[in-house]
Image (cartoon, rainbow, N blue to C red):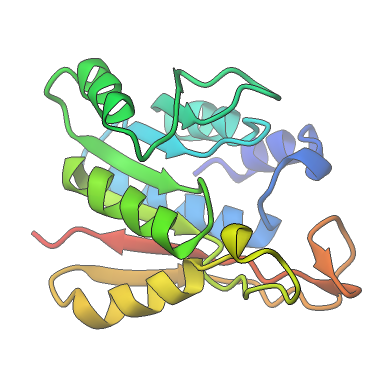
Length: 202
């Protein structure tokens, strides 16, 4: 991976609208770049569920030379390629139309963070993946006094998945950012994020 280009893109990215911890993101992209290069994948097809401000697109396109398809339930900040709830059959059908029989090289799951939602996204979309499935915020713990309907359950799903899935290979990218400043904080402490990567068994 071109680290100079990575640093340039990161510098030009508004960190308050990015949604990634910089060192986690760099190490993740370095591995992904190496993985695809080793397998001769020169233009990976990446599908991203949940895009917020859409700041990851530039990294994917310029560093990985990727084709990038985005799915989001809202177009408040940036218009996704597929506007719709990822849990609805109509959204899956629209993606399958865009894939036109191709497999996904990298699926990045970062939509609704409830246990039920992340589980559904994994179960619905991971069968379409050829290489890598990624789940974001695997170390983000539930926040006290938050409505259960909005509660974060990604870590619970990730922990369950690592126990029951004995076919695939699991990796994590995690920067211990407690005490760091920035927008991802709770009670003055940096929010633990974490990127979980699943390499499909061959």
